[in-house]
Amino acid sequence: MPVFDNIPALLVVLPLIASAIVSLLPSARVAWILTFVVTLLCLFMAFELVDIVSNTSSFSYAFGGWEPPWGIVFVVDGANVYLVLLGINIAIILLNLLLFDLKILLNKKMGITEKFKQIIIE
Image (cartoon, rainbow, N blue to C red; front, side):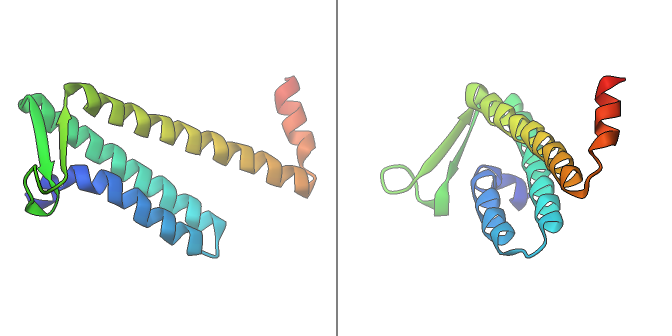
């Protein structure tokens, strides 16, 4: 499939494009949802990359079809595919923590801190 052939490039380009789109969105809720969806999509692509690398020893991707002395080549092997997976998992954990912190901050501004105090104390 052509999409799976471009996974190394999409893992770089998709978050860059999404960050530009998110910075232009007027709604913070839509921005968080889009960010989370793009991060989950990157996680799916990282798992696909793990599957590709587990079937072969390494995966090389030449940008624009230009081969190595003239072009840029990504080579993904068993070591760095798991680093990509680790980085995306950390991003998902951090997004969830930041979203939870934002909910607490918004509730403090609304004066609903008593419920959180009861939850923490009990």
